[in-house]
Image (cartoon, rainbow, N blue to C red; front, top):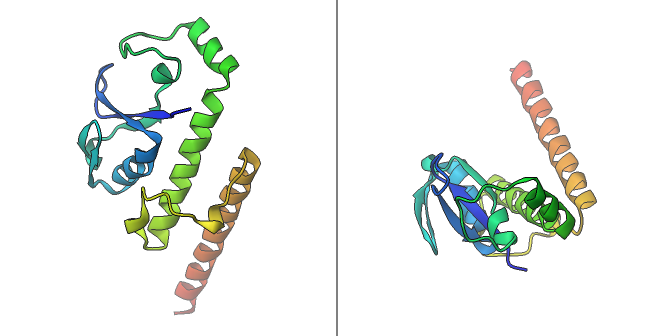
Amino acid sequence: MKKYYRVKVGYGKNEFISIQENELEKAIYAFETNVKAKFDNGVVRGQDIIAITPDYHKALGCNNAEYEFNSYDWAELAQSGLKKPLLETYKLASMRVDYLIEHKQENLIGKNVEIPELDIKSELDIKKVVEKSLTINKNHLCQDFQKQNKS
């Protein structure tokens, strides 16, 4: 299944660029760092990105971006099992981008390189990695605080 996402650059219904999963890391990086990004369907400045969301319209085969989902559409999306994989892919891409930025390896963003530290197979693994990341960040903050107070 191809996964599509919307890079929103305005508040109108059609003010977005549709990207595929392979461009998601690049979009997240542009959003987080305010750099320009070039996609298959257009170019955008990171500072202009309002949000990055799953493109549920394409997931359900609806090509009309102006069509507003009703309760039946949302129910179909929930029953189809499409929503969870789209969100998990986004979470993983976001964690990959954050990891690569933190480790000064921005040149690997969007290149689909293996990151053994983020070998995630399930939502449970995502939660474990997030908790580990929070613990590591907390420890770094505590160490920084202790260093500052020793001075």
